Image (cartoon, rainbow over all chains, first blue to last red; front, side):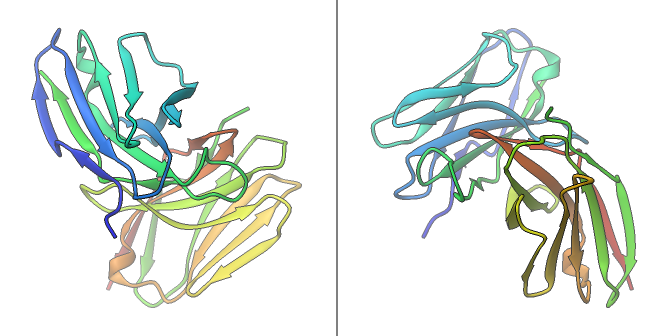
Length: 115
Length: 109
């Protein structure tokens, strides 16, 4: 079975541009979460979506947005890119809304470089 | 609070045991996780423990939890070169994980 898949694997953008990152959860998983990992740090929570609705948002500006589609895949959008947005963006999925003893499984990430 | 702290580096000889330490601050019942990240890769879930447990063992991995001190450790027995990676401790707060900065484990021959 395929794990969490993300595309693209690498992306280079310039300041002020817009970017869309894509994620497909493990088959049967209904929840997708997005995390940002800056070099040398642990991942930071950005969003969680469950059954196509936003359940939670981390401390990120409104330039960051996301959505979940009927097939449970998800997109993360970032507008007006800043140099500081350069990071590894990780998508994770869980069977339900990540409660009780559920596990959270991560994809390999999209490495975004902003020049 | 959501601060998770880890020591940054650990060097261990092949065949020895590795012990990676972590402290967390959330006082409510929660789940605590260990993830492994190899260069250029995402996070691989290794194991997890509920905060009312003291210990969990899974093959070469042993997790110890000291609830009083909010201290979590991951012991890897018979450390191999393939165990070289960054290890992250994380605590769950509702629907999200709060991660430490990661411990870089280097296994030397």
